[in-house]
Image (tube, rainbow, N blue to C red; front, side, top):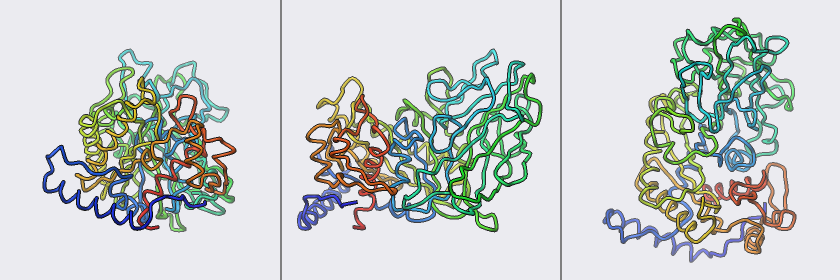
Length: 485
C-alpha cells in the first residue's frame, strides 16, 4: 500500500512529543485539576498493545455490532491487515449469519439465543435468560415435532478462514495442517440436557462427547472434555464439526444448546501452535453499560451479563492460561458525556479483567478504540454528535492514562473526524492518504474513484463493506505501529 502522506515534519513531531511529555508531567503533579487538559492525539500507550500483539497472544474483541463476526466490521477485519501472527486459533459462536465461525443447522425447529432475545429453555413455563453475547447460542428442544438430519445430524460448526488468504498472518488451515476442534455448549443442568452428542471432525474417529462433566457448571458455557484433532489435506477445505444425536433427542423433553467452538492449529505432537488466537464477545445493539453491569440478564430485551458468566466462557475457550490476553473494546459511540463515559469505561475493564483472572488468565491488557465518525442516535452527525465523540475520546484517553493495563486509540482522530459519506471531503482525505491504491490481503482497491469515498452504509453508521472495514482497521494498525515506522 502506498504510505499515508501526513503533513507533519520531523521537527513538528518532536515538538509535539515534548509538549505531550510536559503536559503528562504537569497532569501527574495535579491529577484532580479539571482545568488541565492533554492536547488532542490519536492514541495513548499504543505501544503497549503493539508489544503484546507481537508475541503469542489471545485477542478478545468485545462490543456491539461494530465487531460482529463478519468481514465488513473492523473486528475481525484486523486479521486481514495487521502485521501480527500467524493466525493459529479462532473461536466463535453458532450463529448462521457469522462469516468466521458459523453454525449450520440440520434440524428443525431450532432457536437462536442472540440479537434481541436471550431467553433460554423456551419450552419451559418459567422464563430463563442467558445474556452473554456470544453471537450466538442455539437451542434445540426434544419435542415430538423435532426433525433431525438423515443421519441424526443436529448442527455443524464450521470455520470460514478463506478471507485470510494473502493476509500477513495467513490462514489457520493449510495443506496438511492439523487442526483441533473444541465444542462449546451451554448447560442448563444434567436433568435437562441430553447426555451425549457425537462429533464428526475431518479424518478423526467420531468422538462421543458427554455434556455433563466436572468442567461444566449448570447455567454456564462449557466445553467438551477433550478436543478432537484432524488433518486436512488441502488448504481450501473448510473444517467443520458435525454434531449428531447419540442419546435420543426427539420426544425426550430435553435440550441441547450448541454455542460454537474453538478451532486451533496443532503440531505433530498435538500441541497448540503459538500465534494469534482471535475470539469475540459481541452482538448487535449492546451498550457500554451492558458490558459494565456485572449482573445476569433477567428480562426479555435486557442486554447484560455477569462476571461469573464471562469467566466460565473464558475458561471454556482458554487454550493456554499462560498466554497473554489483549481485549479490544469496540462499540459505536453513544450520546453520553465525558464523566459518565469515563466511569463506565473503567467499570467495563474492571469486570472483564476480574472475569479473565477468575478463568486463570495472566497478563490482561485492554485497548479502548473509538470508531470512525458516524451518526450518533438522534444527534445524527451534528456538531453535538462530534462533541460526544470527542468527550468519549477524552474519557478513553483518561482511563488509558490512569490505568497501567490499558491503552486507547481513536480512529475518529486518525481519520481527522471525516464522515466517509462520499463527499468531496471524504474523497480528498482518502486521496491524500494513499487510499486510491489500497493493498491488503492480496487485494488492491481504489477507494477514491471506484468507491467514490462512500465507505459507510445508508445510515452512515457501519462500514459499507469489506474494503471499508479493512481501511478503518488499517488506520487502527497504523496507530499501533506508529513508533516502529
